[in-house]
Image (cartoon, rainbow, N blue to C red; front, side, top):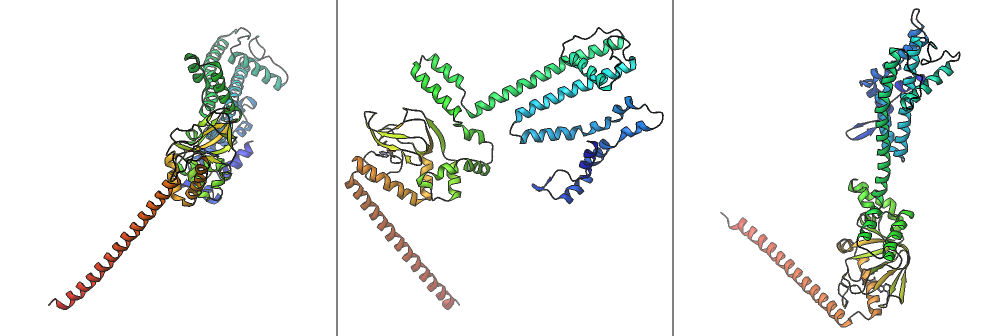
Length: 450
Ligand SMILES: Nc1ncnc2c1ncn2[C@@H]1O[C@@H]2COP(=O)(O)O[C@H]2[C@H]1O
C-alpha cells in the first residue's frame, strides 16, 4: 500500500484547468505537480519513517504506529477524493453511508489502539479492565476492538475501571461516543431526507394532494383516479417536473440532455421526421411532458385552444358530443389540437376546439404552447403548410369549413400580395430615379462649379 502511494506521488497527478481548458498532458501535469506545494507535502506523507524504529535504542513494535503518523498528511487528499466520488457516483447516498461506516470502523480502530497502548503501559492482564495478556497479537487486537465497540456504542458492558487512568480513559470514551452518536444519527437522517427529497423532486408529493381531497370531501372515485395517476407516474418512471430538475444547467447543456432523452420519441412524430437535429433540439425544450389518465378529456369541443399535443405513447379517441361514440383513434407519433391554434382560413370554429379528445388508457403527451408553436412554424413554412392541409381536410370532413369565407380570404391575401408587390416596384423605381438624379447633379457640379 505504501509502495503504491509512493508511486502515486511520483506519477502524474490529476488534470488542471488552464484558461478554462482541462489539461491532461502527462508531462505538463507532472511539471505543475512537482512545482506545487502539495508535492513536498505528499513526499513527507510517504516517507518510510517507521524504519526509524530499526535504529538501536528506539522501541520496536509499540513505536511503529506513532512513527507512521506522517501518513495522516494525506488526509486532505483523501477528503478531496471522497468529494469527487460523491459528485460523480450514481449512488451518492450509498456512498455517503459507506463513508460513514468507514469513519465508524476507523474511530473504533483508533480508540482500540489507544486502549491497547494504555493497557500495555499499565501492564497487560494486571487487572480485569486492561487488555489480557493473550499470547497471539490478533487476539489482543480483537479484544481491544471489541472493548472499544462496547464503549463507543455506549453499551457500557465493560469491566469496572480500577485506576485513575482507566477512569479518565473510559469517561473520555463515553463523551466521545455521545458526540459520535449525535453526528452519526445526524448524517443518517440527512441521507434519509436526501432520499425522500430526491423522490419528491422527480414526482409530485402525494401527501398534500390526498389531504386536500380529504379536506374538501372530494368523492372517493375521483380521489381514487388521482391516486392511480400518481401511482402510474412512479411505476412507469414518468417525470412531469423534469424541466424543473434540469433548470440549473446552462441552456445549451440542458438542450443536449433533453435532446438525448427525448429525441428518439420526437422522431417518431411524423411531422418531425425530416426536421434537422438542431431544430429539434431547440423544440424539445419548449415541449412540456404531460400524462393523462384513462377516461380523462385532454380537450373539449368549444374550449379556447391554447396548446397542441404530440402523442409519445398511448391511445386517444376523438369522441362525439355524447362522450362515448368514437369518431377516430389517435396513436403514437400523431398530433392533435393544432386547428384552433393556426388560423386556418374559413375555419368556422375560430380559436375554439373542434372536437373532444379522450384519453383511453394512460397517455404520455408532449404539449406545445400556442406562442411556441407560432415561433416554430414561422421558421418552418413547410411544417405550417402540412399542418394547414391536414387541418383543412379535417374541417372539411366535419363540415366546419366555410369555403366561401376561405375563397374570400385567399382572394384578399392575393390582393394584398399584389398591392405589396406594386408598392415594392414603385419604391424601387423611385430609388432608381433618385440615383439617376443624384448622378446627374454630381456631374453638373463637376462642370458648373468654378
Ligand atoms: N376526425 C378527426 N380525426 C383526427 N383528429 C381530429 C379529428 N377531429 C378533430 N381532430 C383533432 O382534434 C383536435 C381538437 O382540437 P383542435 O380543434 O385544436 O384540433 C383538433 C384536431 O387536431
